[in-house]
Length: 266
Ligand code: ARG
Image 1: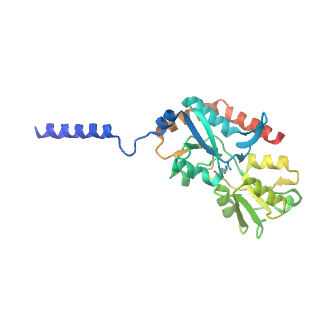
Image 2: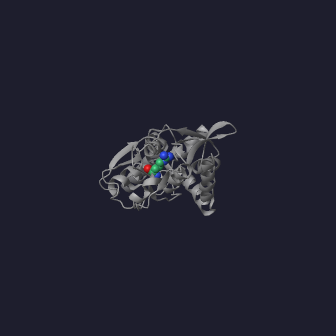
């Protein structure tokens, strides 16, 4: 008898719990489906992943991340809205709910994984140092920039990579990548740390710049992934499906290549 009562009490409380929904209920996917759109945070100053260009005379955000976002929109059956901001605000806008997800060449580091959910990774890239072409022979080792200034983008993993590996260099943290390149060209900084495809784009468009032969080590979790608020299990499942498909078909590489060609053609 006692057992029976206890058993039904347990069952009742389970029903009650399910009915009310707990505080950790996963509304990640439903929320977006109900709105009929997904808001994607990005810093479109990062060709070939996201950058602005004129399409039919209109300023438009394009790039590999934009194509990935569009595929996610298709899978969810919702419209895609891009929200541009500086990189150091991308992740926080996902946390605050201003944006639904962040796609911005975001490295899914261990540290960030504590605060956000990340999709499967979709791209891996190495870090390099851009210098003036006329000085490229002076900068061959990680200690060659000692006492010199090195710029990195605010909020990026390059801030840490440069600080830890370019021993003795003075760190300059700037919000915009374009600003870092201008400072380098003007001789106000001696090096700029960026991931390789981005650096290659800048070098292709600026023949006074070159990539130094300095070897920087990458972390084991620096690959790019889509950022979501913690607890987005249902949404992550859908996004992972899209990423897996794009990776398996070689589409990601095509997106990057096409966007790169477009970015340097401007
Ligand atoms: N992968 C680096 C990071 O996650 C840099 C990303 C910068 N992205 C951008 N759109 N500016 O910190």
